[in-house]
Every structure is written in structure tokens, then in C-alpha cells.
Image (cartoon, rainbow, N blue to C red):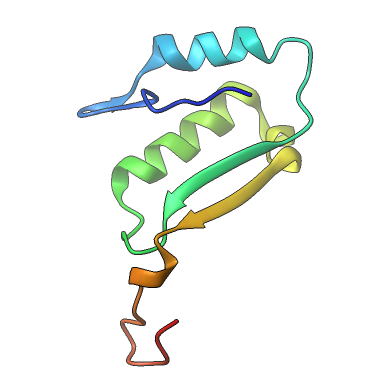
Length: 84
């Protein structure tokens, strides 16, 4: 298990951390759990990280990704639908 709280810096992706992750995964990976907050809008920084993960690991990387969303209790539908 690799936890990557330092993958994102204030100005973009932390490439030394990304390279360290790549070294850890050189023998393969069974699953990647990508966690993000449901109550936060997907911003430019999130998009940059997802693009860099794709660029660094290749498109096959996504075959191993499970998306996890936290803070679901704080989410409300911006279109006025049902709160969960």
C-alpha cells in the first residue's frame, strides 16, 4: 500500500513523488484506489494530476483504478435534487 498525500503541490504535480510511486509499482499493481472529496468541485489541479498519472503510467493504468469519494454526507446537488 502506498499513500500519496504529497502528490499535489501548490503549483502542480510533485514529480519526485510520482517517480517514487513508479519505482514502488515496478513489480506490478493489483489495484489503485484514487480518493477525492465528493463535496469539492473537480478543479484544474485535479485534472492535472489525472492527466499526469495517465502520461506517467500509460492508459492501461486505468484498468486498475477504483474511484473512492469521501465527504459524501456533506454533498448537496447543485441542481437542487435530493441530498444524500
